[in-house]
Amino acid sequence: MTWLCLMKTKDEVNLLFQNFHKVIGTQYNAKVRVLRSDNGGEYQSSDLQKYLERHGIIHQTTCSDTPQQNGVSERKNRHLLEVVRASLIAAKTPISYWGEAITSVAYLINQVPSSSINFQTPLQALTNVVLAPTVPNLPPRVFGCVAFVHLHKHQRTKLTSHALQYVFVGYALHKKGYRCYHPPTRRMFITMDVVFHEDSMYFSSESELQREYHKEIQTLDYDCHIFEEEESGQFELVNQEVGNKPVGCHWIYTVKYKADGSIERFKARLVAKGYTQTYGIDYTETFAPVAKINTVRVLLSLAANLDWPLQQFDVKNAFLHGELSEEVYMDLPPGCMVSEK
Image (cartoon, rainbow, N blue to C red; front, side, top):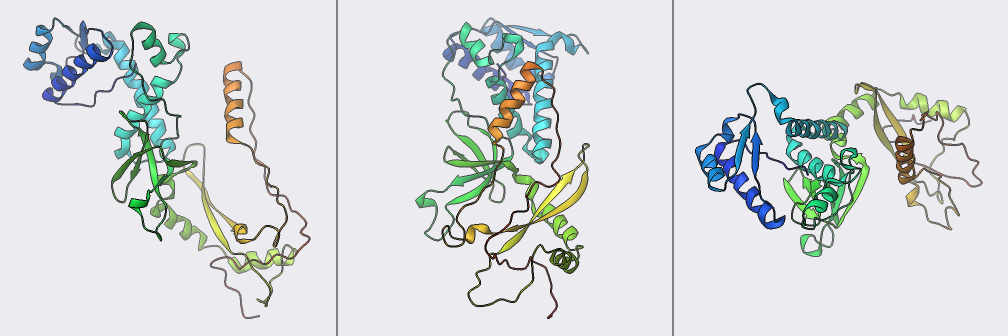
């Protein structure tokens, strides 16, 4: 099992170990016989030494500059640090969230099978030795992703939003719920009434990054691109007429990264607001074949376990040019200036 000790001072370590000792005896019906640590001053307090002697616990310490003598703890610390670093970098989360990240990682490590214990999870291996208490089992989520927390009636009015955008930061310790944080208000929610958008990272859409998008997009020559597409027969610019029902559109800004994490380019995609059309009036049927992320994860898992080779490629033209049997009108893109003619 992975246990966390985020305390620093002598008094904090003393109090933490006393509570830990009581939990082991109460929850697992076991006794702590040996405490092994380095020579840190937080483990050398007189109060802690008296407590260990009173309960017959032997305190073993490593030799100076010999961390390998406490190899299990050192390797676990390295394991935690590597996964925390990967989580923070992948989610573009500020380093100030390292505490939330490390508790989330500890929860996940305890739920993931390990080859060193015959592909059991640490929780399963622990229950094979002692009678362990039941731990809430929550499906894992992507750290730092966007989470929409539902607001109950007493938390909102008739005209306000029914959900707020939060960032997922971990799992509750003594409740069966997810920890979701709202940076603007510094408010933490522990709830199961939440919808996750695991493909969207909360901190990748911050205002500072958005300003960079707009700075790059402003350099585009809208008129040039619009009329080039018009000449190629993609569409025709017409005046607004009675009976025409145009759909809106908006820009989707994306940052493309290189393999080393540096920014390669800023990309803008124009998307029509097709959801404003009515089924049976404006259109009859649509097709949008996509790959389910669960299927991709299963294939990657099989490839890892069966040692299959993997190949990856990008499709340059992912959207096919379909032939429309009806006329579709769309507003001009935001920022596009067209002369009077």
